[in-house]
Image 1 (cartoon, rainbow, N blue to C red):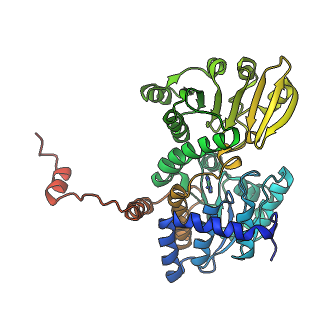
Image 2 (image 1 turned 90 degrees about the horizontal axis):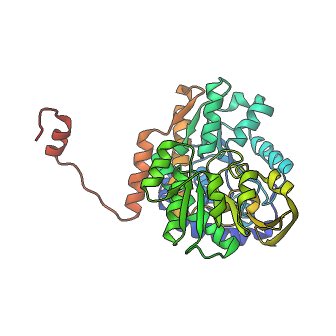
Image 3 (image 1 turned 180 degrees about the vertical axis):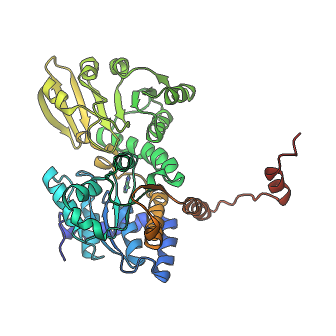
Length: 418
Ligand code: ADE
């Protein structure tokens, strides 16, 4: 079997850690049981470009249990857990092409190798696989039924492709499911970003001034968790509505160049480029820490930071010290890549349970309905979203009320008032 991972001898560690993750993923486990019985993905070829983590391993097991043939590559050069990659290859016979720290060329070679499966379904996180297929391997398009997309950044890219009429096949935007972004983006990114920063730096959050750039679902989560640990949180935004929401949520809101002067720790979660720019670095305090939790490593202007520096050295794992020409030091975490995956383990399994339940159910939806889909970006069907929420509540032992017949009648009527 063709595969490219760091070291197959790491497989036992990957297996144990995946078993731990699986314990916390009851929704995906219940889908896997049904998939084993019903085989909804029998003969379906799936090329997946996802962060290669223990949670992704549980998703791969689920797809295989449903009868699919899967190939996997990384959706970020720094997010692969090498023990998990080894486990997938050695124990589960899943061809994986991913090594933590792979260079740009290898990263794209791995994507092309993953596409070597000639997929019916693409499963992407950030749209690098879809864009490689569209740019370099268009011949594969005739076999593709549809794809799924995991993240906000990917959905934005794919909607831009659809709008320009260049999207070659349908995409289901898993990110847009409520049971995905309300939980994964908010609670997952919130906790795992702080986790990455703490593991990398061992800094005390209490009393720190934390600047969160971007108040989307991820930014909301990061700000909430930083505040929960006692940080004084400043939010920067470009959208008036979000800035207003951040203000009324109790955060200080100001332009990023002003925040640059006072922040101790800066976290970008905007999805856009050069959010922390030369002008910001010029204003930062000695010892400022900069980290990114947006999908791509474009939010911190690294070429500018390098150009302003007279010395760069690694001071701790995942922490680089940039000494500027005027002597101030700025500390960059995880090379400016997703700090939660570069310096920690990504979102906790309990939240990935819902995200990947959506992925598995959307793959099943595509296998059933692909003939009716057009090359555009589709929302996740409502029934899937509701099913994931109901299964998650059930797994948590939480029961809820039902409307009475009288209450249902009331909601349907317009005559009844005060
Ligand atoms: N994205 C964020 N956290 C993740 C995780 N733990 N596994 C896969 N993808 C992720």
